[in-house]
Image 1 (tube, rainbow, N blue to C red):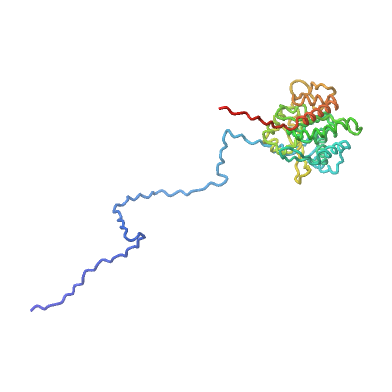
Image 2: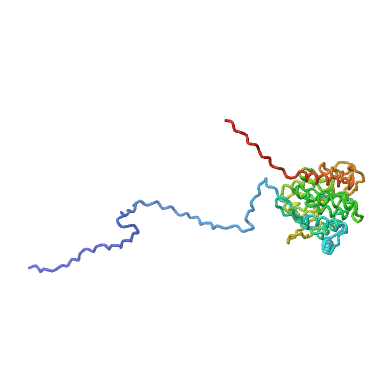
Length: 380
């Protein structure tokens, strides 16, 4: 008899199921099967990676400037006031600081009194609504004193004011130091007419008042673009606040081609020399005060670089007082300024007659009237 034994057989172990990852897909969307294809693995390079090094400030290359771009003019040597005429910078500053409580000449005070009585201290009635600043008599006297000290302004000088306005600077230098030719040019017709209203009574007073010296003065309406040079003037003055660049470019050519020696501007050397190319260097600078304005301005006094350039072989002098009505042959003169200079040489009566005639023409011209057109039947 075989003995029976019970053999227990354990069921085969089922493989462990890994938990499924939750999918972000919406329910009901078919799951994508992973591709069984394997991309060939790229072999790793045995070379070590080079570190990225940023260049320092000293190692960075400066951008190369294009060939067509012009380099800026170095005006550092021209900004420092020149030590000329035996005066140092400290001596010039000391002289300017001492210009306080100056008393203008009696003739200057009388002339300003006529101007202030007619148009006021500020001077208005400018058409188009422009705002014109007017220097005080004290500030203008300081400007004249600096010009006499460092720019050789004297009775034989010839003075031009570009943008003369009411003509105060011209009237001032005609009284002190009584220059041989004081000329002002103004493009605005309205302000030029106001300057004639000043010129006429001042010229009349020189004929009747013993205390008023004869003033060799002329104020004209014109455009500075009509002139090619600043000859015959020794001193060029311009209150050039607000002037556009195109005028400066033209005046720089006029000055550089003329025999004019001195320039007074209210623009710094970086604009006069560096931007517009005036061949000048700075002598000194000084602040000025204005009527009707709280802000002040700075006047810059320049002289020509390298001395006066003579034209041709003819010997010419910048400080020669003409003695005849005909223009001197040894002093060049632009055609725009020749008629006024000739009338000034003829005497005060000639200038007065011209001014009165110009004022009469201005009043007679009046305002142009509109003419109504007649109704003309239209024929088809």
